Image 1 (tube, rainbow, N blue to C red):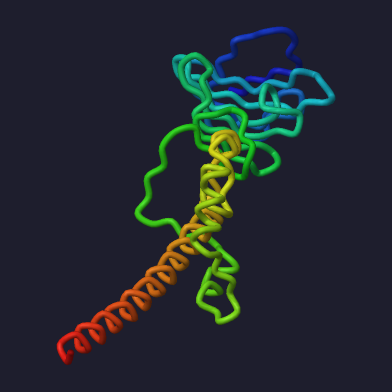
Image 2 (image 1 turned 30 degrees about the vertical axis):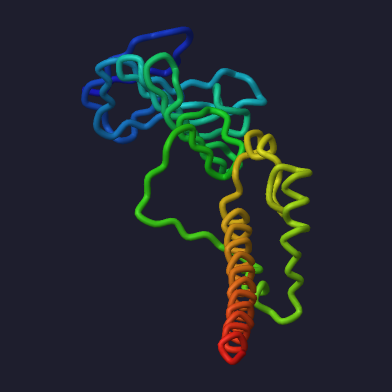
Length: 210
């Protein structure tokens, strides 16, 4: 037996049984099999030309929304939990938010990230520190910079990182640059110590000969 609905206005709870493949509602819905929801399954178009339609699956108070209603006029994907708290949101521009509904980068995570390994694309790796023409500032100049600014040369103030975040690739480059500079300072110190030891040994030999 065929069951056919030609028009639908307002809000209606509808139970569909065995439908044939060509049966349609307003020529826009074909059901082959069954649609089942134990709570609330919605497909809605708010009628706003600036918004796209959205599809909602409700389970208790958690839901998955596909479309633009409440996500943005250009559409997206939103996974929410109790209290409409966003677990993950994918915007139309490709930005993904985990634990936040307003991602401001390709991936924005409001929480901790755990991984076995993280690889970053880097350029201008600081092997240049060991070049013969690299300018190694005197330690007295570095000391003066620390006294004046309260940080090593090349780094931003703490307030900058607190507001903007820490650029991991650039910070790794700067840290290695400082480690390599420190290595050069240690080499210089060792050379000076060796030269002083040689002079002390010469003085001791002269004293013995007297």
